[in-house]
Image 1 (cartoon, one colour):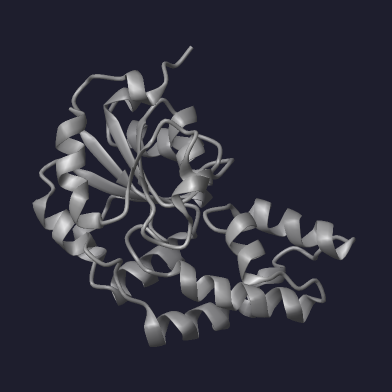
Image 2 (cartoon, rainbow, N blue to C red):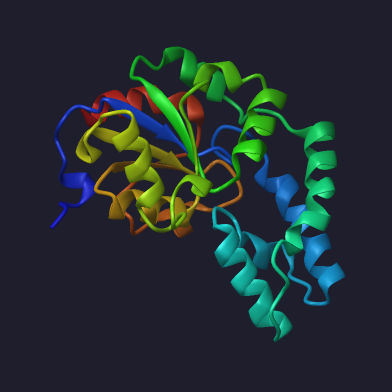
Length: 224
C-alpha cells in the first residue's frame, strides 16, 4: 500500500507541474470557450458548472459529462471542430500564471510538465507564454498513458521516465482531479488556489495549499 503523500519524508528530486491553470493562465479562457461549446451543442453549462466539472479533467471526463447532459453519444473527435476557438482565445490573451516565472527562477529541483492536454496543446501554451524552453524534453501528456488524471498513470509515467521514485516527487496542481492523481501516485502535492478553483475544492487530498506562486519554492523547501 502506498503511504499518503503527507507522510513521505524523502527529499524531493523532481517537481511535476500541471500546465493549464498552474503554469499558464488558461483556465479562465477555457471556461469561456467551454460555455460557448456546450451552448452550441444544445446542453449549456454555466461557468460555475464548467469550473466544477471540467477544470483539470481529462477528455474522457469532459465528453462523458456532455453526453450525460445531452442524453446521447457524441461522435469520435467531436471536439476537433471547436479547437479553433481555444487557439484564437489563447493567441489573443494567454499569459503565464502570475508569479510562476519568479518561482521557476528560484527553483533548484529538476522539474517537468504533466498535463491532461495533448502534446500540441501543451507546446502551444508553453510557447505562447515563453515557458517552453524551461521544460524542453520533459513534457508529458495524457496521450502518453491509458488513463489521464484523476488516475495516477500520467504522474507515474513522468516519474518513471525521468528515473525518480514516486515518493521523491512533488506535484504542483490547481485542480481536484490533479491532486487526486498525485495522492493516488504516492507523491507529495501542492495545490495552487490562486486561480479559478477555490481552496475548499482542493482540500481532502493531503496537499499543501497556497495562493501565490511566489510562495512555492519556500513551501517545497519547508516540506523536505
